[in-house]
Image 1 (tube, rainbow, N blue to C red):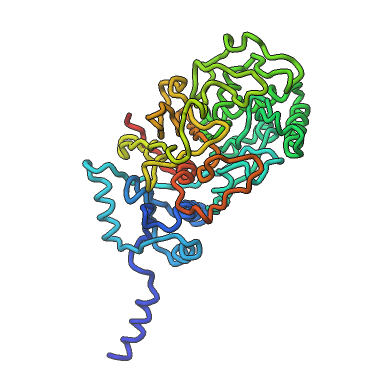
Image 2 (cartoon, rainbow, N blue to C red):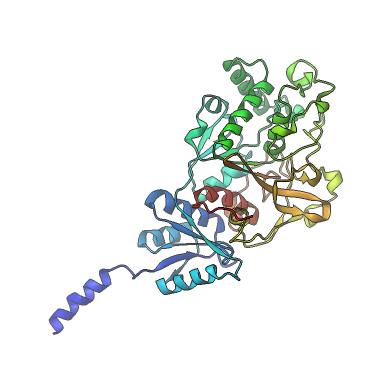
Length: 419
């Protein structure tokens, strides 16, 4: 009998653990929230294995099949995890399905192909999204005006708009006009406009925002931060109206521009005024100015709304976090005055005390867009030319988590929204 026992034991030990799962908690027990998103993306992309996103369960945890190479990768990347049995996983699923619990399970199935709209002259301190994508080890491709106007957008599922000024006023960085990076970006924009037979950079950017609008209408996902949010809508509203001062394009802005805006074209905002003063570094009245906000770094926070996971899965996915209150941060566009937000827009995060929205979302045609105010969630007052944020110092950043929620959202198996 003993001679049969050893081979039997060796056979059993060679088998994988029976139907066990890997649970990545996303509450305060998680050592690296940001890299956990990268793991979920990596599993989807490389192994065609579904990932369960457990909405409102321990901060929006992830769960998937326990395979040794998955566990090895979690160890390498420093992501906290728990090995749970099939029975324990079934109990979690029962908790999520309980009608009285504000939780749900969403299946992530196919990772989105990601494009970042960004100039070739981009500076390393420019963009929080590319910083966090690189840190989380989520692959993306960079495109710019030529690729957009050449019809390349349908090759992608998810598009991030780099901190671009879509009005054609070069970010109104007139005080930096002698800096090499400013001159390089100006030259890049003007050469691109000429290649496409356009006389002005403002005409180039308008053509780009229209192509992006087609992308979203057709079912694409668009995410933008800082001044890529309000200037996108300003450009659409100013279609056919000259809002750019001669300082930037050689001829004066239309003095009656604000009476000619087309708010039916915009995604998020309406009834705003365009600011045509070339020396005032603002594009419209949408942005809540520091002198109006009267906030300091010590008391600048915004709160995430709590949505019904079962009835409103999309905003629930976009607000998954281990904290419901997030540190504010400034940018060329910091926050949105609520009186200019269109009625159908979903406010995901706000500072109610000063009447501003910080994080908003909506649908256009078959697609989705999200606008997130501010420049860098871990750099309160980001200055031009500063060193890029080192995310090794902020692996649990709630503000950066909101960006990554948007990355995974397109991978979800779609459920019909019930409200």
